[in-house]
Amino acid sequence: MVRELEAQLTRIPQVFIGRSDQELSYHAAPDEWCAKQIIGHLIEAEGEVFTALIPGMIGRAESEHWHDPPSMVRKECTADAGALLDQWRALRVRGIRLAATLTEDDLLRTSELNWHGGPQETVGDLFRHWPYHTDAHERQAHEVLHAMPPAAGD
Image 1 (cartoon, rainbow, N blue to C red):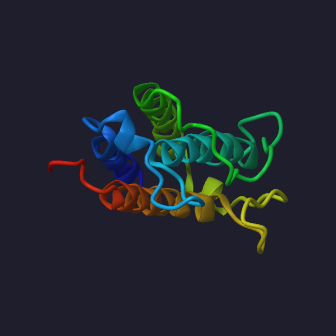
Image 2 (tube, helix red, strand yellow):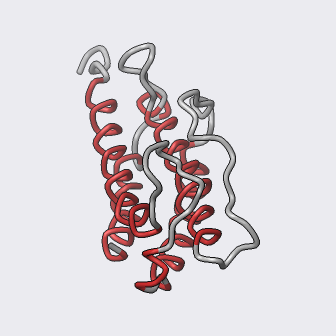
């Protein structure tokens, strides 16, 4: 899984780099995120769920850190895409460092805080979900960017 997290560190930015602000701010439908909002969600998931919750679950932080579930209401449409990507990269690097230190015992630890709202999850459950979550939003970004109509004259 660590290798997949590392591969995503290179692959995810490629979806967004070289795109115009218009492309990255495009909404395929009124209730769908633009590409920048997808980056914002990935930032929130990296920072609030994966790299913040796991240290508390394994006893490396004073207490388990949890705010609110990831928000469906995003505010990144006017943000600078490069700055968003830099923020995501920094969080992912921190996450990779954390993931590389997890032991088998760490992966079995559980938490009362469950970000899915279902049965109690282990660190291993969160860890295994992490790259799949990112992949799902990478696909979502591709879909949004491909849904944008061509510019007039193209």
